[in-house]
Length: 189
Image (cartoon, rainbow, N blue to C red; front, side, top):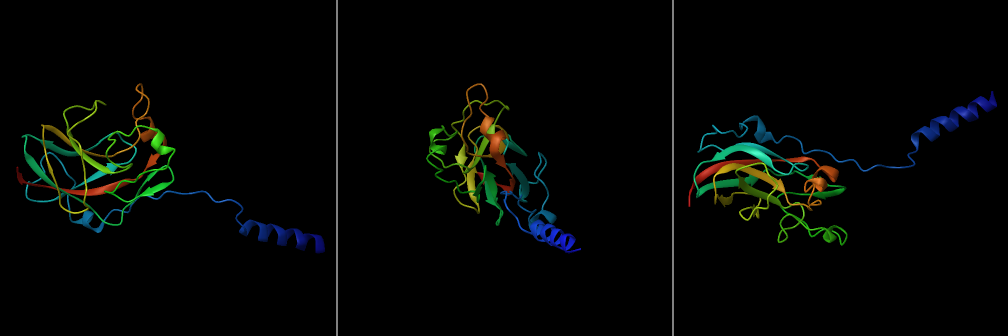
């Protein structure tokens, strides 16, 4: 009976003690604004903001908005209290980070912007060609982006480039999470 009590106590106490912890990433919860704001689409009304999801593990996330004219202006706001992850590094959009010395051994997609800076661009195709028209969203509210070309309005995090044969490698390998972004058309330049 004593042996059974000792074994039972050891199992119960041992089962409660954690020996090792694993880092777990958690997606940003849908913002309260999502209940009242429609998702962005080609038919989104010009005067009303719409919401777009930007995925950390994708080369580009389409907003659903088609830019028909050069000079169209978009007001972009990152909804508050959101995070996304570059491996186990937690990032708060739209701001990027300098990265560790090891991260800086890799070439970034946009060298003048930090890792995981939120980028906005207009793309005419889904290719992996470098873009000179992408801009970093520098402020969380009412950042103004002026389209320099026509095509799809896209968002993405700035991250390391994979090898030439697979430029999206680092996006798929260790990025996770997504962020909600509010977009509205705000005139022309």
